[in-house]
Image (cartoon, rainbow, N blue to C red; front, top):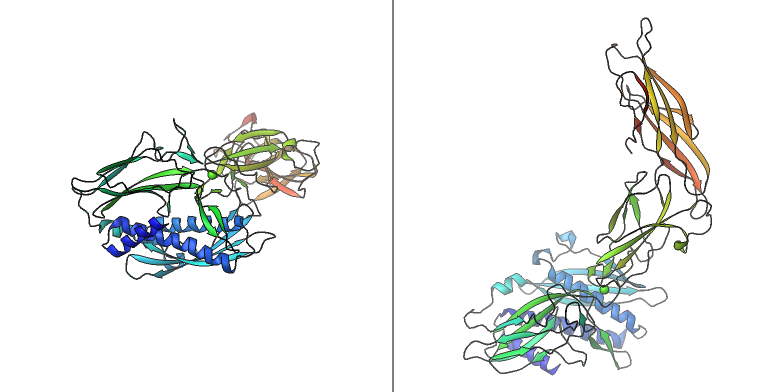
Length: 521
Ligand SMILES: [Ca+2]
């Protein structure tokens, strides 16, 4: 902390518009706000709030501020003011509901804005808690181009790829994907001739010094022309001491899951600072359950036919980024099972999908069948959320099949086409009662002229006759579909209605018995 205050002090005294100093100041202000405000809150209003709730609050604030900082500067405004920020944003972290209400004010100059965040954390059975904090948001593009630097004399710094995980690598604890498995952050820094490397440090998201498992911060003061770090192991579970109501300190993890920026910074003895950035994907915790408001899980099936449907569900968050992928399991309601749906595994499982997006096209379904999908979110290294709950049951559409023939009896003065159709509708593959079928025929001369032509599972030898204006006119297409009502037995039963496919004749003249195609849905 002393070292940090020293860094801040120098940065503030210099006030020369140097890019990295600007970043450091912004970072330090955030750091002070986070620790200071939480400390203050801890002593005043958070007496009854436990560490978990506080942790959620810190992570949510950190993630939100980072999100705002990553926006184009012009977009840092409420949507009502033409910006990208909703006036209220609600997320769910485990049992907690985090509500964030931002306001944006002009800063002291054109490259500054002032973000005030009211953050509220609630959970069933806990006291809700909130606090307000203000964070400066900088126009990074502006201050970077204003940097007072000359490439000939700048110090340089680069990550050492022999140790440092590659851009986008998955990291957790003190581990990473890749050959060594150890999460080393390594860099080589060099000052130009006649200058010395004054300081080298690693930062996370411009907000925190990286720390190792011994709680040592990644900051060195070598005072040599070159300096290399190759033995620093970043602990992604690093904590920050947070003041408690009783005056004690509690170590709170501060690195949110998601894509984090590791910044390697060098400053020479002329206080010229340069940095390089590498993004690593932190994955210490499982993603949240795909959910909209923390209590209702919504999975919607759309574009349903007899064999296909598309499932969509809310995006699950894994820290500050969406979940890496999902697992979708589909169960089918078997005949004779009128008991409860859960545990869902007692229904036969028909498919498993692992999409990366929050939707999945299901194929190879069975007509007029009842399905129960569950979804869980997974992290890059397959840490899994709970499964979704609720009863997002859907029923595939019944399939009608059958045949038709067209005759054209020569009768004096008339020359009609006579269609004779026999159609059968498939039956439910799940337990159901009160099943009714209603058959509709669409008049080809009047598409709005829809007539009920029968009931029952099979429509037998329905005859339709039409007299065309001229005997040479082709036979028009005649369409049928079936509307089925039913009441599923067992879970979430209740009267339901489902429509079959629409079949249509394709022959344009006399034809012997011909099978209908599946037609449209
Ligand atoms: Ca994770």
